[in-house]
Each structure stands twice: as structure tokens, then as C-alpha cells.
Length: 86
Ligand SMILES: [Zn+2]
Image 1 (cartoon, rainbow, N blue to C red):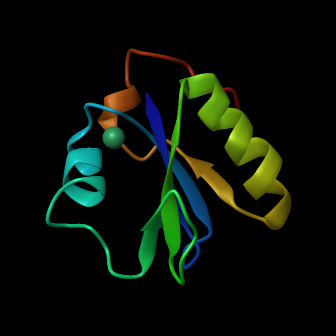
Image 2 (image 1 turned 90 degrees about the vertical axis):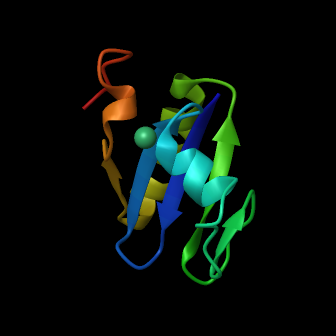
């Protein structure tokens, strides 16, 4: 499973894989942000789950890039797994 962190403040989409420490901290742990939703959009954004990395990338490309969002490889959880398309 892949997660997309939509950040409305910085206008970024960041993709993380399920085992990532950011996912366990921010989505499932005590770092759960007050103004970000899980599977829903709140004031500062939200985290959305996808079945695959490709699906996550398509979500970013189709829904968010047209609104001026940058797709970021923010984290080492993707390294060695996939090459994000440019
Ligand atoms: Zn990550």
C-alpha cells in the first residue's frame, strides 16, 4: 500500500510506502495532525491510501498537479523500490 500526503500549506504531494516511519507516526501514531484528515481533506491537507505506487502517482498527477501542486519524493521509503516518473 502507498500513502499520499497532501499538504495544502506547501502545495505538495508526497508519496510514502506503508512501512514508512512517517506513515506509522502521522497516520497511525501520536503525530496524527490536528488539521490533516485521514482519507479526507481538512484545512491543512490529508493522507490518502492507494493500492499501489502507480495509483498513488496517478492520483497526484490527475487531481493535484493541475492545481499547482508539486509531487515530491520526500522520503527514503521509496528509494530502491520504484522510479517515479518525472
Ligand atoms: Zn516515507
